[in-house]
Amino acid sequence: MREIVDHPDVPASTSAVAQGVKGGGFVFVGGQMPRDLATGRIVKGAAAQARLSLEHCVTVLEAAGSGAEKIMLAIVYVTDLSAKDAVNDAFADVFGNSAPARNLVEVSAIGEDAIVEVGVIALA
Image (tube, rainbow, N blue to C red; front, side, top):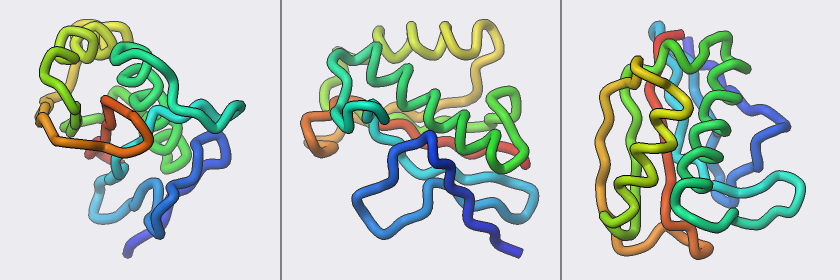
């Protein structure tokens, strides 16, 4: 069975997609934009964007009954590979020494001046 997972504390996507989908023992969280819920704006800086995108992912996971400790793979998109160190710092802050596997991919654009977007796959 497939269950849509959305949480009101995570900014809704501007596209017609779910924040997350739970099924088959996994939770798939689509790419989360680093949008501040209070202002509706993208936060500034690669480290802040990575941290907020991860926080949004964890919030969606928790709504699905999962959590950060169950993340198996993070998919990170950056518009410039120079953001890698900031992403590494954010991952260290969130996961400490138990970081998940990760793909980090440079893309030409994310949208709305974001430079980082994060999605995850976790155990349910």
